Image (cartoon, rainbow, N blue to C red; front, top):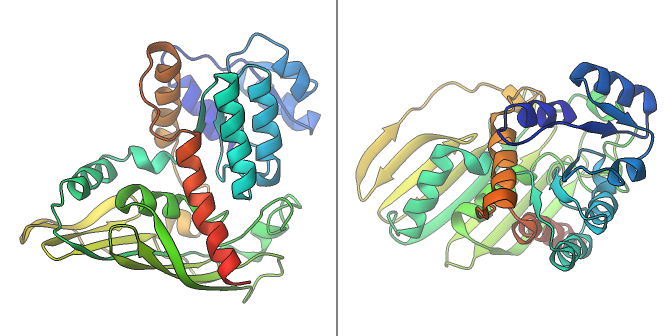
Length: 318
């Protein structure tokens, strides 16, 4: 994922890619040569330099430690998802950011989609009437080789979770961003196919604060992978997303978008099958927040929300 961050920085005005630190010094050297930047011997060496912002692109289980260390060193932080593996660590990051006076943005680049922003505004305007059902479907495919690569994926210590905490957290974040917070009524998770320590199937029933009900279905063993779907259904209309693009939009009984199409697996079967545009928009947002005071779309508080809901789902399952 570091290459997506690098490309985003290179396409962001008033930002400059300066260096890289990696426990694997060979990887650091290759990355540094690729982008013409300095390879630091250690993370601490990098933090001792005059850089302003650190992108944390390490395994998920290191996010909290790395982010807190960077904040305490006086750096702003771009933190890959998930923010942390549990709410308590996510809140420690937020508290450190508040104390240090530095900013944290947690990667959820899909929030910057024009369609997502459009529907967010429609929900706020009650354009769909009373919301009744708000559902999220993430039926992905991850080949067993995916989990064998790197030695940390699929472990409780470093991945924290599977179909939800790692693969599905972007969808959970979008659902909460669009509709609002929710409580978990019932949930179940299991490992159905992969030889991993975390779930590859998860189901949850939700009760949203706005009165709507909903479900989450998530998996990483549904061949050959299906695009994420979010359905927001109300008494006066609906919005249906395929990934972060509107497939259907009905507002006050009028159909504004009707773009049903065949499934294109994309990131549903290959997590690298994306571009860096969303990362560019999010890193640009952080840079502008530092330089001009622009509001962060995903700050530390927002980053906690998806982690909290997923943790609740895991706890419901015992």
